[in-house]
Image 1 (cartoon, rainbow over the protein chains, first blue to last red):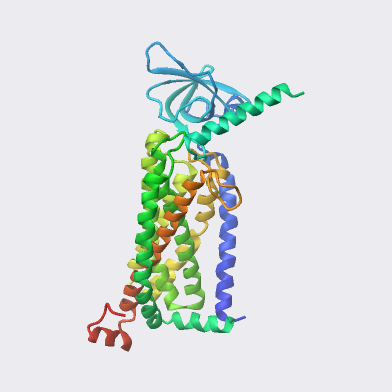
Image 2 (image 1 turned 45 degrees about the horizontal axis):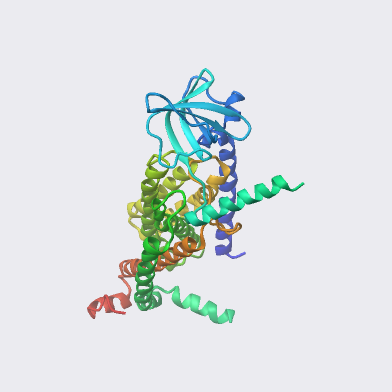
Amino acid sequence: MKTRHKRMAFILVGLAGLAVAAGLVLNALNSNLALYISPSDVLAGQAPKDKAFRLGGMVVEGSLQRQEDGLTVHFEVTDNHKTIPVAFTGILPDLFQEGQGVVAQGRMEGGMFKATEVLAKHDENYMPPQVADMLEKGEKAKQAAGATAP
Amino acid sequence: MGFKNSIAWYYFSAPKNFYVLAGRLIPWFWGAAIVLLAVGLYMSFFVAPTDYKQGESYRIIFVHVPAAWMSMFIYLLMAAYAIIGLSWKVRMAEMMASALAPTGAMFTFLALWTGAFWGKPTWGTYWVWDARLTSELILLFLYIGFMSLQSAIDDPRRASRASALLAIVGVINLPIIYWSVKWWNTLHQGASVSPTMAPKMASTMLTVMFIMAVAFWMYTIAVVLMRARRIILERERQTTWVMDLVKAGTGDKQ
């Protein structure tokens, strides 16, 4: 083996070793690298008890209620398995919508999550409004067909 | 065929020949960059349709995503040159790695900056410490570390070797950036475009994004070749061909 090939092999083996080490470290840190905790995990007791954390999931359709003071909102966050009610006083981001992703920071008080900050999480789909309308109509037609068919 | 190619490879790995070739290529890459950037930006604003959810604010994607791609591609390229420079001791490869770093850092900064300005109106925050944003910030620090290490050591060959090692170790960060949105839950959304899935974007939007990406590539090549030529003159200033060039007062001509 020539010297330069040896050097090359040395670098590549070193890099592979580093990759394995990094993989193990990241795997060990796994839960700390997550930005938010899902409602199921929170209800399973995996969220910190007396510390603020972030709750993430979907806003349940039809759950958004404005309170009388005009600033406080109540809504429910779900991961399609468990659901947690959330209260928040403040301005919601523009993309906050029912049926959309949300990440809220705060803590559990009783059965309710009191949020101090609410961020909207959007998905990776981009399309013109006309296409979105078309897709929605198509979905509805499919559901109607599914309901009438045996 | 392979024999001919390997001759071209050796021929242009000589700084003198590379200097001449780069000088001839630079205007073409600049031309392509300017034309594609003009077309890409025009299409970003006036041709690409409005998004059904984000409205007009999503248009920053046409700078944000290509810049983020470049930030990772350039790092990969820089590390590849670092490996070649370290194991083959090719001077030209060492110089190319140094020439790539500032442009890579610029694109990383651009991706972070446009991302912050996009995050505020959509997510509701400029910054959040999620895995994607944090690992991209680490990439910026790696570029800055590479450049600082290089300028901290006086002997250029030793400086190249030390910084090459840093560049190679930093490669570990690239898969972390790329798959962070898949491995951990993040505020940043998943990939809209990836080699293994159908794109999750309207085709016009996708076309504009690719035009911008090619424009950024052309710009990168033009700027990096210019920087490489400057580095060659600086490092090879003891050689007769550079001295002749300077004596003739045509330092900027081919």
